[in-house]
Length: 358
Image (cartoon, rainbow, N blue to C red; front, side):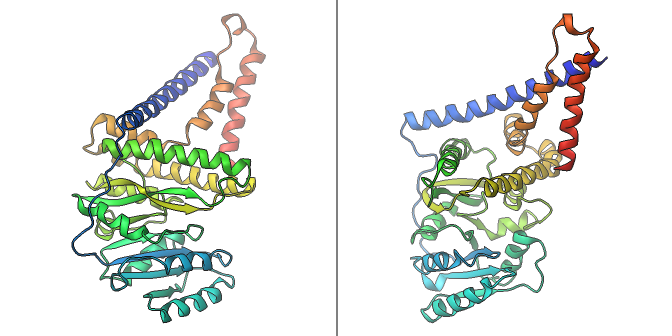
């Protein structure tokens, strides 16, 4: 009986890893074809005849050391001033608010339509702040988003807006670059991982028109798509991932804008990196449990459903590999040794306990 359980676990885990690896191979081959043909995943579109009203949302929480750099960069944006609204969505509990108030007053005096938004209560964290900000700008058609540790180029918004000329485009995601990519071995490894994600996975997903994700910063949303998808929701730690999938389930689509480069800071310490990855892994898993049924019940083709489900399960291969290490079926000659089987079962129980307490 125990041998059968271990064999079943091992088989299911192996099949999952094989399928996940196959989808990554498909994306890599698609990227290789794009590179071989010297084609961009999405050609930069022509600018619109009339520039729409855009609200630039800057969600902050205790960011006094980087907020001045961010706001000074925002003040240099070359988007028409009469079509741009800037919201500093400040939920800070330290003296960041005082720093922001001074900077906002300075930039308003220079002609920038910038607002310091303080909510009565920090309900819903980042998702709540973004949703609250949208209620204050009914005239805006698009919402660009920048986290505090990113520094936009002057043409950031001007380059993103044209990507919405196509039918049913919900969001356009720019490409992350790195302010401190060469700081140490950890940041260099992160830079390599993020670059491969954008240049291979995001580029390939955008090129073949399958489901892709908005990455929380360095991009822009059509506000009508946000509302149609049910708005920003705070029941997961990755509200951006959640919203982008809900919008695409409603028939909207996302595009990757490789020519829109937005530099940001990478966590230079291992503890900060672990917290970031824990948040992303938890949030992705929450989105998987939340949307697995809607994806399966959607009208998407089977290949698109498979790519979507495995994308939402992107952090699952790591625990699956750990399980396989403990569920490796012993040789036939060892099945009679109770100690061998019990050792594997104890390993699986220990992994379950760690998962329950994490």
